Amino acid sequence: MIYEDILQKLSSESRLRVIPETSDGIDLVTNDYMGLGARYREFSEEFHRRFGDTPMSASASRLLQRSQKQHAMLESYLDSLYGKRTLLFNSGYHANTGALSALSAPGVLIVSDKLSHASMIDGIRLGQGESARFRHNDMESLRRILKQKAPLYRQIVIATESVFSMDGDMAPLHELVELKKEFPGTLLYVDEAHAFGVFGDKGLGLSEELGLLKEIDILVGTFGKAAAGSGAFIASSELMRDYLLNSARSFIFSTALPPSAIAWNLLMTEHLTEMKEERIYLRELSRWMRSEIEAITGVVSNSRSQILPVHAGSAERAIFIADSLRKSGYDVLPIRRPTVAAGSERIRLSLSASLNREKLKPLLAALKNVIKSENFTGVQDSTGV
Ligand SMILES: Cc1ncc(COP(=O)(O)O)c(C=O)c1O
Image (tube, rainbow, N blue to C red):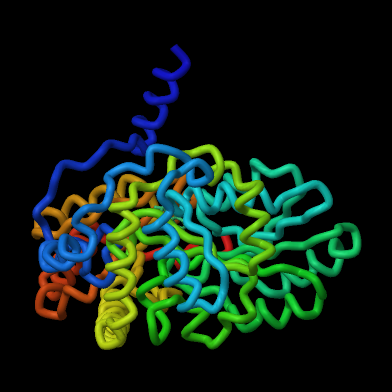
């Protein structure tokens, strides 16, 4: 059977995915960046007091849902934080596939960063418009595309992540905003999945941190990472919200998230806005860890966030390093093709505000050992592809 052949090929290339066993190692793998997920018991009393009688199912798509209470509460809270109009989606994957496929109407060109997340790529592929990709974070490459193609389309949308999920580096948002202005009418779409809760005074993301909230036309935030919940939202204009509500198929044709999950998102987001000190702490910890990793591997990292790649150069080596680190008590996993390009396989360390230097030092010692024992020579950061 063809599917068996495909599985065998994946296996022979060390690319077969399996669901990992439950682990009690130190978590460096999930996206619980602020450590809120691990603290869920602390919030259970507050949750039950405020939202104890909240239904466990929406029982319908948002457009058919009988009670909008919790969904409306969360949207209006997000509206006030962002100064925009927000629309909830069932996940970041739903948000990107739904919104980008809807935006990609005939006559539209979506120009996206080459390292954009799979959900963005899938959304663009589903659309009826056309698309182009610019070299990762390369504004000259983007400008060339815009110069050449902008006159040929009715609408241009530039799409990027703010903090990139696999390299932890950041999009040059200021430059993107400037470039957008050179081509009037262009919309800027920014996925803040890995920045929501982690950057900005209130944790609204890199756009807030850089004072660019007003300049970003369509902003995606997800609750499944720093906010320790589930689902996502898109913050945009009233008109864009109306458009997405009428045309994003993942919004229209899927049962809404349970009101109880939405209430939890609200509670977690309220707490997140107060976690400024933790954000500063996580930034410091990440900076320290990055320089320690650079000293061990000899590879300069482009990361400027809590996501720290340790490049392995091949799937086999990534598996070998991850296995050794797991034996030292850390929960880490290899990242392979197609999630990252061939040759840029890595371990993706995901730091959290619940960690500290003492907890991380044994990992660094283990990394040093495994790299020495394997005669590891680093490869350059995988940006650009
Ligand atoms: C940049 C980015 N956008 C969107 C998503 C999808 O979000 P969700 O997990 O809520 O579907 C992810 C990863 O999970 C991501 O890394």
